[in-house]
Structure formats: C-alpha cells, structure tokens
Length: 125
Image 1 (cartoon, rainbow, N blue to C red):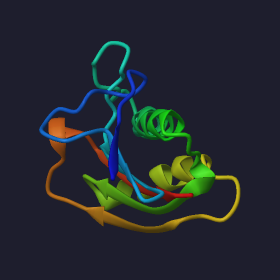
Image 2: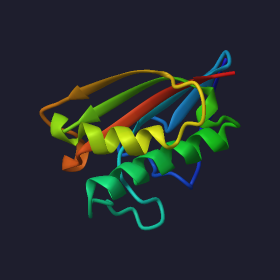
Image 3: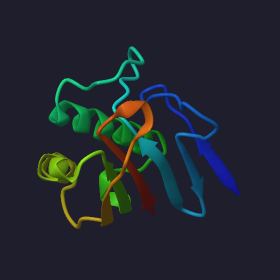
C-alpha cells in the first residue's frame, strides 16, 4: 500500500505528481528545485543558495515522512551545466553525516522553471 507524503515545509508540486510516496519502507522523493515554500519564489541568487534550498526542500519532505539523510540510499542530481558540479557536490555532501548514498549526476538541456539544479532521492528504513 502506498502513502502520499505532503508537507507545507516544501514547495507544492508544480504538476501532476506528489512530493513523495512511501511504499514498503521505501520513500521516493520527487525531484526538488529551488522553490522557497514560504513565498513560492525561486532562490536563484547563487548556485550555493539554490543548492541549499533544494536540499532544504528534500530535508523537509524526508522529515515529514519520518526519514533523515542517513536513510537515503539513492540520489539523482540534474544540472544545467556540469561546471556547477564542484559547488553543488560540496553543498550536497554537507547534508550527509556517514555513509553516502548511491548517486548519479547528469547534465541536461533544461530543467523546470529554468533552474540550475534538481535533486531526487530514494530513502529506505
């Protein structure tokens, strides 16, 4: 049985999907971009701020479902340009405390709302 996860501490979906779905102990978090849930505006002042907003959105969804970054087993990072990788990678890594999850990082032609980074995660308990 699947459970839909929803929190006002992360941005509402901008399409026909949910923030996350919990099924059989696995939490599938939809790709998050740098939308600030307080004002629904984009945080694009710098790639550092953008990445932190993305990770904070992921964190809020994990927390709502009773998970933490230590429970994350797989991530996918989408970048508008691979030259952003070092900065995004450093900030992303700071949210984990121990064993890092499996991951791939992909440069793409475009992302929703013309952002520079989108991150999705899978967590398990």
